[in-house]
Each structure stands twice: as structure tokens, then as C-alpha cells.
Length: 414
Image (cartoon, rainbow, N blue to C red; front, side, top):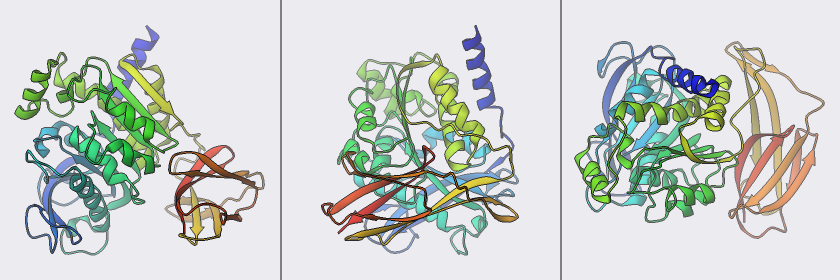
């Protein structure tokens, strides 16, 4: 009975908090000068990436003013032969909670380029972050964009999110629904991803079953904080509004028709996504704990895989945020890697230094296959690592302070 009560309270709280914003919408076309093709026009030279953007607004409408405050970015990639509006229930929910949600419209045909779509997701995320400064494309976003972003998607878009997040240092976290293997393979790209990752699948998914798709992606992901949740009775098309004709046809042809209402399905998977995004994009310690509670206690989970924890310890100073700033240089390097750790408490009033004589740091280097290569312990905030004997290539430096992971940096030995 206690577990059932917990689930009900969690579901209610998921849709009861931060529902204060109206939804504004704007269509933007970004460009990638290094590629060709795409969808749309007017974005500049190179590949055109027409994108539907929904954001917290003062009043509902098109091209209206952004609400007071600033907001992180969430990019959602659509499924195979699906459209951005197939996810209106998801982006509406996220916008009301204070996220700028972008949905690229490229690669919607029957012969999509998965690699281009993944790169489009990454370009859209990066370009939206840049709109925070002076720009002529969408001045309504100047000073309104928190410099944190999540890449995600459904089915093909979910698989492509691994391609977009691969080797992308500007992405804060990664999530997806019923992610399908892509070409090139999502599970191969996952080997270079170190940001917190949430993979959500459905028990009754016959289109992209978790065993052959999401499981392999989770296994390959290099992140030290990664989670896979397969939800009971959920099918492939239950992610989104559930009415896209192409998705429903493919799902019914596979022999797995929906058995739950779309409203219930949305509550079930957003119960995991909402606190995950709040923890990573808004530094919300309470939501981080709630995410772990949902992972560990929810009775709607068919199967799960967990590595690491999102939970954090509240300091009691709610108006302050602890930031562990890490500087690693030179990168690339052939021999010596300098590491500087600056722990501080930041607030709207400035920065208050808080150095502790009891800080114990561990600097752990893994190769691209996730194998431990080198471990260094120190109590100094400035140190160096000698990587002269390592083979040339890409490595990942995990930095722990007092047993808590505070940063992961990609380093290149040349």
C-alpha cells in the first residue's frame, strides 16, 4: 500500500509542479555550412534545418515575448516517417515547466540519413544556445537561454540522439524513447558519450524491442551515470501522442497494438524524464533524488539498468548552487595534462569561495572502450598528469571529489 501511495504521489507531483508558463512558438531555420541538403530555406549557406521551437511565454501565441527568466534547451528528434507534431503532448508539458523545446523537421522521408539527423539535433541545440547573445535570427531569446541542453528523440530520432551527442562537449545530458539502432550504429556512437543518459523503452515494443536496441546502447554508453527503464505494457507508438498514421501502421503490423491510454502512457514515462531533466538542466537536487526514488521504487518498471546516481545532498542554502569548475589543459597534449579544480558557491550576488582542506580528489582515465587506464589521488586543487606513455587517441578523464563525480572531460593524446 505504501509503494502504491508513493507512485500515485509521484505521478501527481510530476504534472503538478511548475505548470505556470504559457506556450509561445516560432519557426526557425538554422544552417550547417559544412553540409548540404536538409529541409527549409533561409537559414544561410549550407544545410537547412527548419525547426519548430516552443518556449515559455508571457502569453500563448506565435512569436510572442519569452517569459521572464532564462530557460535550458531540449531538442527532440522525430521517429521514422513521423513529424514534429506527433510529440505535441511532450513538448507542451516541457514548455510549461520552463524549457525551450526544439523539434527539427529534417529527414522525414522514407530514405533518411540517420547520421545527418543526429548532426541536425546537435546543431539545433548548439545554435539555440547561441541565441542567448545578440542575434538577428530570433532576438526574443537574447538573455533568455540557460547554457545547458539535452538531446533526445523517439525511435529513429532516439537512435540519432546518440550520433548527435557523440563527441559533443556542449551537450549536458541525453535521453530518448524507444531508441532504434541507426546506421551508423547508435551503440557504437554511445562509446564516446559521457554525459548523464536516460534510455526509456516499452515492454510491448515490437518495432524497436529493448533487447535488440536500447539494451545494447546502454551497455555501450561510456557515461558513469546512465539509466535504462523499460516500462510495463508500453508500445512503440505510446511515446508521443500515439496518433501518427505511419507509426501506428508499423506497430500494428508488428503485432503489438497499444493496450494503455495515451494519457496514462505520457504520465508513466514523463515520471522519469521530468526529474531527470530538472536534475541535469536546472541543478534541482530535490528532483535528482525524486528521479532515483522513481527508478528504485516504481512498480511500473518491467526491467531496468542503473549505473551511478543522480541523487545529491542539499546544503540548506537553497539560493546558492555549488559549482565545481574544472580546467584541463593543454588539450590535445602529447605529455603533460594540467588539471585545476576550483570549488566555489555561486549566487546571484556573485561568487563566494569555499575551499576545504579535506577535499580528496581522484583523477581516473578511461580509454574509449571504457577500460581503466590510470588513477591518480591528490588533495591539491592544482595538479598534473603525465600521459606520455599512453597511445595516441581519445580518453576520458573522470574527476571525483570526496567520492562524488564532479566532472568528465574528453582528452586527446597526440
